[in-house]
Length: 585
Image 1 (cartoon, one colour):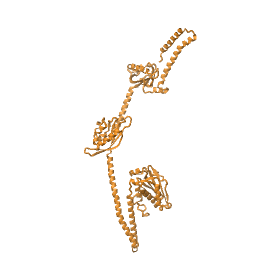
Image 2 (cartoon, one colour):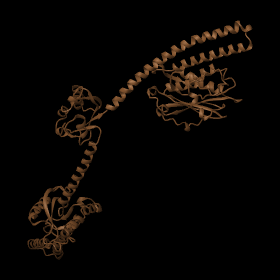
Image 3 (tube, helix red, strand yellow):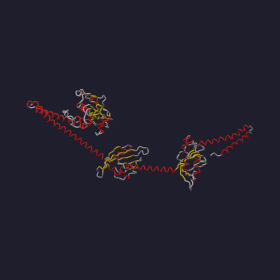
């Protein structure tokens, strides 16, 4: 508020100086005297407008920012804000102050009306301190002073409400400053809610950790245990509360004695702590009082990298007892299967040799009888001997095919990169007489696969030969195609032959299965079974699609990389997700 006495004092001083000037200088010029008379009035007017401009400048909060942005910041603050002059007169109040203290108007409002009487002197001293500051820094002149505010006396209440606050203030201009009062009640309520929310979420996290099947230990940046879940008690028969607050090394001594190799485990954990590295998998066995393995655990230790908890660790003990049992059982079964296969192969070779010898003898005597005693046999006897000779020949072929089928077993070292372009070119040369009159369509960009060239040659030879052999068209056609499927290759051999009924599409891959034994008496019925075995040895899958009278297409997958040979043969892994219906054949 602009005070009149200041202007009276300035005006009186001006006229005093004017009187002295007239007397001392003995001025008589009317014009000069008029100028001297006007000077005090002009000086007073300039002072008046300067102070008024300063107050308007203060009210616009130029010190806090320009224009409407500063006013918006001031009015929308959640704390109580007052723009005051040096004498404590409130020039402007924000919305929060009016809502909290109940002062609808601020005309002629003084800080003494909102400050508790016992704190008024403290506020005055802080106000003087703020305006004596040479440098202007928003809300940096005074801070951290506890002050009580008084609510405007409401009707019907015997005493007004007292609100505890913390005062912060700063000078905005030479004539105005900002006082900010932080409502401590509100802060306390917020802090309480925050603590309650933190506790609620902490209990939720702790309960979640307690329900885990894995034992969990949380270690802080000091290397002390701050949390142990219930599963630790189950794994090691201990009271988890006894571990809280202990160093990680000392806490380990409570349960590592039950490990089969406690010193080795402690050394591994110590190394991880010292080098701040993670332990991804360390297998340790827990023994019972009789020295037998009671549980197999996988130990994992992960350093915490976040800024707040950096230096701490999360440790897991995962029960892998059942997994290790399954692995052990699988190894034993695999070893037994390997030995069984070796014995079976040995038996196959032995029985084949034992069968081939009498068959050769039988076939030889049949030929002798036909050659040396043909003139002594009637037509019935000759036909019987010829049938006997043909039967022994087919039986010998079957034994040879069976040996071939059982011997299809390669190790990784038997595989290499195979260029299918070169393989098909060589095959075309070998089958040139069989391919005579056949449209053999082969793309020029066949891929390179990873496999055994001899077995792959046998695979393509059998499929192409079957496609020609069982083709009843005047213009037989055999086509080879391929498509990239992830890291594998889907390849197909397609013909326009007689086709196969749906119910036989799975049957054709079985040993000694022949769909047309009368049309092909010389075949052994093992060709497609050999194809299936070869594809499976390459960790692939083979299948057929056919339409009667239109032809048949054989699809199979082959690996493009060496590491795919090591995959297990099981359904989707074998086909690597190949969807045959998407192939445009």
